Every structure is written in structure tokens, then in C-alpha cells.
Image (cartoon, rainbow, N blue to C red):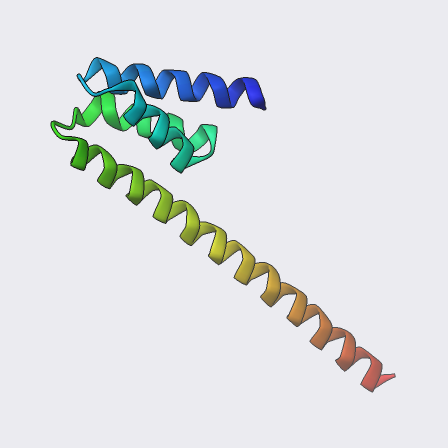
Length: 97
């Protein structure tokens, strides 16, 4: 896991510096994104969109992070809902016995 994180970070930093931005911007983006998958997505964006400003780059970092956070919230909500539904079914089964 650590190796994949480091590899994704290094690839992101290379992509950032290839666009003329300082490596510190790539390192900050990697820390904010957090996961190898998010960093790989950002790296692909950089090669495809080739943002011209640090603001554009930062906006995409925030967008990716926001999507990840929203996905995690939906997942947690679904798990909570599934647990509640199971409790309700268990209660209904106990009442019918």
C-alpha cells in the first residue's frame, strides 16, 4: 500500500512539474487527495486538460476530493440504512413468532 501511494504521489509530482508548476504544489495535492486512486485520477486530468494556472489545478483537486467525500457519505448512509432495515426485519420476525 505504501509503495502504491508513493508511486502515485511521485507520478503526480512529475505531472505537476512537467506543466511548469513547483513540485511542492504536486506534493500538497497528493496529501490533500490522500489515496493512490485519487492521485492517479488527478495525474490523468493533468495530462489531458493541461491546466494553465495553479488555481485550475487546485480546483480540480478540490473537485476530486469533494466527489470522494460524497461517495463515502453515500456509502455510510447505505450501510446505516441496511443495518436499520435488518433490525426492523428482526423485530417483525420476533413479533410473528
